[in-house]
Image (cartoon, rainbow, N blue to C red; front, side, top):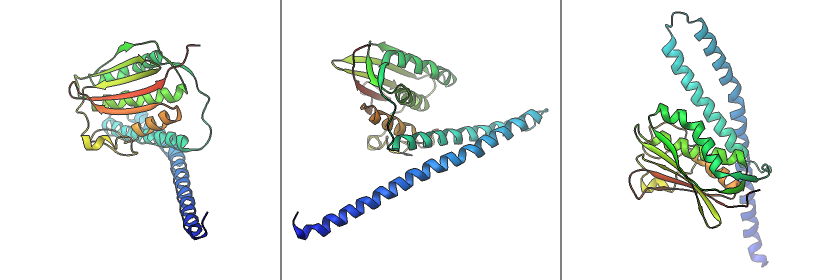
Length: 247
């Protein structure tokens, strides 16, 4: 290396080391803060349960329900922060194993059917090609669950969310199509950023679901994308993985 560029290279290395230290400090803070929040939130839930039990005439039922809903949202946010912290950690992930993607779709749709029914949304599976891919089952469950849940949140009552498992050559694709408002083109490039919420921003959510899905997809060597539908209003979320032989 030429002697005259050594100071320049050294300065870059020092800057990268400081940046790495700051990122690690940020990850530790998020993880520690989330862990610390779990205990008081659990204690608040216990207090709510006790108050509800003692509220025999139902005078505070509405207020207790609103407080409980807020605790539920905060608890969900803490769980997502902890999940992101685990994905950010350099520790090794569980070993991948063969996963039946069609069965995965059936299971996740069944889990989220009550949410779809409560919102008067038609949730179903339109195609189930036989497809097996290597991955961490818990990660793939999180990815597909977040994609479907995100579609349900933005699809208005009376709309539909369709899930399809398709095979093309050596790749398997899971698509989630909704009939929501779609996403402005300028926002599409940012939808996987943490805490970013596409318009309308008054919709429910923390802006972490798609970030978690992307982190899980990267850990499983899968491709995740989101695009506006070309056949009408709504979005198409796609998870693409390499197929593997059925065991």
